[in-house]
Figure 1 (cartoon, rainbow, N blue to C red):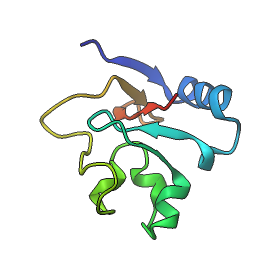
Figure 2: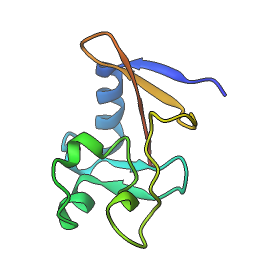
Figure 3: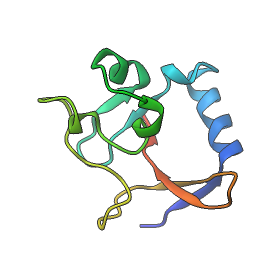
Length: 98
């Protein structure tokens, strides 16, 4: 599987085209279980700092019976996209949900 590597700017443009400017409404899909999650899902479940985990960890790590406990960056690489941040490093992210 080939991993798409894109700049942060392109990633943000893609998200805005798909969901609008309010990033809290953007939807992400866990590559392991297919759970779709938003920033608000994390807020509703009282998970601190959702922006730090929204695109890299399934909400099931914190919420029983929702999603799974998958997180990116481990040994198994199932993600399809990596975003290059301002420091020049690439970071795996969940795909945008349909």
